[in-house]
Image (cartoon, rainbow, N blue to C red; front, top):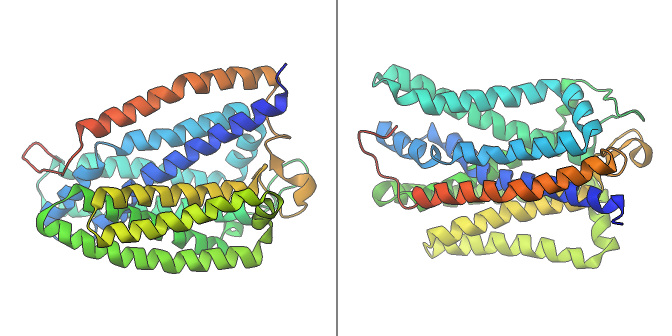
Length: 343
């Protein structure tokens, strides 16, 4: 008989996998939204909208998959997070709704004022989502004030600490860089050259926040390093992270846009892997008593039979998401072209 712990770890890895895919794919959509408002003229903004429009909803599906796994497999975590972090979660929902509405409504009228309004809202919602996701990630690294029953003792404003705000800005810079490289891959002629200049500046900004976030995390939260010293082979992942950043920068210099975007994806993947390695086996660490009050994959999972059913469902459904995503990208591959039928 397969031990229950195997199912718990498997489902946790599937949840982590969905979150990594979400951050990698929806990250460039959010980055495009962050940069969209700074484009010049309606044509450039339409190019950016139409680069993200075919794939953004499919990319967001991975967040739904991850949330579904969390709800079904770790109901204790889902319950306490949805009540304790109700305000930031509602802000995220508001941002997703506003972003979808901005994409769909912007081109319904030719009126410049109408389009300017939705341009502002598209930028605002994208920035809000990127900043809030980074804020939540920062709080998961430092931990939340949880009681032994998993109840949150803080408030919405407890989430705003210098460290969590730093990680929030790091998230915004990372997604913006990712979005600029995606646009570099999807555009041509003068706008492509412009995106190249933006990408180089945003990589520099990313590197600044990456160094600050890394050094601050190692200084304030050395617990994130403990798994690496316990299992030295894990140091391979920081090396892969450094290598992907270096190869991304080299690919930009050599004007190999698709390769640069691939390494930009790997950069986010390895950053997320380092995060999950650092907090494992916790899902939500506690700052009050990390050893006894934290919500882990072991003390907050569903029953054995539920985990078995969820494992079967996950194995069955994940290939469909991959098929949908790959099909959409195959249909809309290549450079973005604007015609009267586009948004």
